[in-house]
Structure formats: structure tokens, C-alpha cells
Image (tube, rainbow, N blue to C red; front, side, top):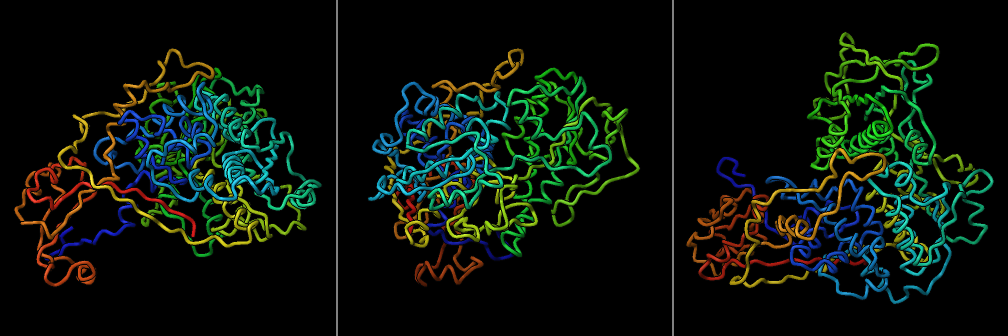
Length: 639
């Protein structure tokens, strides 16, 4: 951006190109979403599935229930609406994933065509290509079969370790199964994903919780050389308001857990859900400060915690509505524009779906007290929240005590965050529990203070998206591997492959800039019980949605030695993202000197990445081939 007579611009390096594939950069497990979307558009779905599945052990689950940070980052969303990345992943997994009739084994998939996606050390391409893969069989215990535990067990098995998962509940999935409603995540999809991991040789021991008398020390005595604690956050947090102990008041996580285990939880005809973020964010801040002293959560991280809390509130509200409640109301501190769900395309869609299903929202109100009669809740008093964030953008709600209202309620559900149950930890284990109620770990290796004992997921971090918990499991698997091999984790190295695309044939799909986001929804009249809200994209719809991708892997590359400064590229650019300017007007002259000799430093080619739609007209119009369209593929390997 111009600043007086100077221009704020920086030279592009390789990391700039890597960071400017925003869906890849935003994904915690580094799925090259753009590439699998592009392969769908090109009619190559089998290769697309391999790209989607390679870094993600729970890809089928994510195709239905992921928070999709890739969509929030998608550059198409800056123009109109993001590409339907999550729905396209579901489209692929239903054809080629473990829930498909034609499902292939993981090792067969590794041997197939790669699809050309970018890879990191956690991808199957790297894990399965190790010379010693499958030869170790050293014993590792994983505690918890949620997303972190499943991902860790998967990667360890691919690397050749003998992994055993200890799960407190009768089935795998953790809060995937017992927290997310079946209408968002069918249970057979979880079972198929777990079956795929079992097929790698992972053993699951159900109804086997850790407890005093059977904990970390006892696992070591059974011959497990490393342990990963991924117990998840299965306990709801209390809210310190009057009446919170009345009959008819229940924590959201307890409500969902009991409902999904088949128990009846009567709440009456009028239900109010308190969907907050205050307790959840306070706990998250404490956890982060304990993890790394001096570290402060960014506003985006705080919003992520609040969004997760709101998603639990929405799940509880919609579950109550589907189970017979006549009136369901969600009260939240934030005004409607500030609501965490409004920060993403998927969140806004979930709010619209909840409204369609009869849920009413009261934004800008917080709980003051629960009104009870004869020990049973009959209503809730709310107080107006006048501001949620302070001047610095921090989460610090302020209330107008003179503005209150009462909402009648037979039942009140409190969705204000969760915490892990670490009652199995004994002082002699040597594992430190932080003031936030989480396990203290090394943030790089995820190792606790005890050698060979690792922790991740909601047991060690603030509440996260399920794909972030899966990333914790993958990081722990690498840390465990390094520990058992007696080698430190090396610094990653990046190899870049650059392909120049033929200018004479380079074209984007016709009308790609006019195509609109679409996710197929089941008609409201059919949404009862566990009926899914979304359905699967058809082949034609999937290709139509995939063709909306802006191909962020591809960039116009400028060769100044061929340029005649005719300005045709600037004239034809439909988004006005190309400019020429005197090099002397660049603000950071030191960096300019690093990439241009004095003889070259007469004019600079300026490119606004945020505006570029990859139409290729600049390269096509250039008479001297000074601009070419080039595709970048990245491979990061462990040092």
C-alpha cells in the first residue's frame, strides 16, 4: 500500500509461496485441500482422495464434522464465499474412504498415484516410506480413543509400532461419538474410520479407563515403552451463579453424553441453553500461559475457543428440539455480529440451520441467576451484555445490571466449556497438572516432565477443533518415535518443485468466477431424530463446486530481463492486481537491494496476491513471455 511517496512491498521468497496457499497453511495437519479440490475439478477423484487422506487419519469424520479452518482461510471467501472444502472431502470419502464399498487398505493407497499434493513429515507418503516402517513393534500405550488418540495410534502403526488404545467408554471416538450428534456425524462413519485404523494392527481395549490403581506406572509395568495421554475434555465446567444446582439444570457435555449413550434426559417443553465463552476462554488463557510463560492468546485463538463452545451449545439446542422440546432458546453474551459462529461461512450456515429447526437466539444476554421453585428450575434471569471485548480486542464482557429479563424454562443447559478428567494421575506419576487443570507438556514434542510420557488434545491444550486434536496426536507420534529411536526431532527441510504451465493452453474453467457456493441440505420436513442435515454432493455438483477454486498453487512469475515495459499485463488484469512502479519508491530499499542489482533497480513489478484470480490473462497477453504461470508443489521432510 502506498504510504506518502513510498510503497510497502516485499520480495517473494519460497516461504511466501508456501504461506500463500491459505487452505494448506490453515489446516492443522497440513492437508493440501486446494490440490484435492483441483483434482476433483479435473475429474481425478481417486487421486484427490489420496491427497485428502494422506495427512489426515480421520478424513471421513472430518468430511462431516470438521470445523474447516481451511474454509475460513480460503481466498475465494474474500471474493464471495469459500470453496466447499469439507463437503468435497465427504464426496471423496464416500467413494474411496473406509465407509465406501470399494475401500482400499491404507498401504495399498500409499502405493497408488500421489496426485501431486504438497506433503509434510506427517503425511502417509513420508511415514510409510521409512526404511524401517513395520519392523519395530515396540509397545506404545495410547489413553483415549478420541481424535488425538486415533491419529497418534494410526501414525505409530504406519511407522511400525505396536499401539494399544485404552478407552474408558464402550466404543471408540471419545467426544466425536458422545458429544457430536448423529445427525452431524453418523456413528457408522466413526466405526468405519476406527476399523481402518484397527486394520493397521492397532489394538483397542474398551471400557478400560485409567484410574487410581491402574495408571501411568501400571502401564509402564506392562511393558509399554511410551505412553500418550489423550483423555479429552469430558467434564463440563460449572457456572458460579445462583440456582445452578437446581433440578433441571445440566451441563451441555453431560446432556450430550447421556443422550448419545442411550439414556433419557427429560428437560420439559421449554429449554434455555446458555452458550457462553467467558469460563471457556478464561480456562484457555490459563492453559496457554502455563504452557509457555508469557505467551498471550491471540484474538483469533480466543474466538476459536468461543466458537467451539458455541458449537456445543448449538448441538445441545438442536438435540433438545429434535427430542420434543417445544421452545428452545440460546442466550449468548455476544451480539449477533460478534457471535463466534458468525466468524466463518460454516458457522453462519449452522446458525441458519438451527433457526430453520426452530431454535431461537437471544444474542447480547448473559446469565444472572436461575430461578427455581421447590428445587426445580422454572426460569432464568438474564442481564444485558453491553460489550464483549475491551479496547484492545480482548475478551472482557461488561454488563448493564439495570437491564434484565426473565425467560421461562423447564430445563437449562449450560454450555460454557469443558475440562479433562485427570483423576487417574497420582503424585508418584510425576506428571504435572497445571492451574488450568491440564497436563503440563513440552509444546514441541508434547512430552510431559516424565520421559516417555506424552500428552495432547484437550488434556493438554485449550479446547480445540477436532482436526487440531488430530494434529496433536500426529505430533505426539513423531515425538514418541524420536524418543524411542533416541534421536531429537530435526528441523524440517523444504523441497520445492516448480512447473511452468504452457501459456498457449492455460485457461481457467469457463464462468468459474460466477459459480456460487452450494451444500445440499435435507428438507426440513425430513429432519427428525438422527437424520443427517446435509447430503452428499453429486458428481456434477462436486465438479461445479471444485471449479470455484482459485488455484493458489499457481502464480504469475515475472522475468524482468524479458520485459519491455509495454504495460499490457497491467491493462488487461481484470482485478487490477498488477502495477509497475519506480524501484526507488519501494519503502524497504534494503530488501530491494537483496534481489535487484543497481542496474535492474529502475522499475519494480508489483503483484497483489490477495486480488489475483489466476485467470492467466497477464501471461497470455505478454508479447515477450516475461510473465509465465507456474505451479508450486512443496515437500517438507524431517531434518
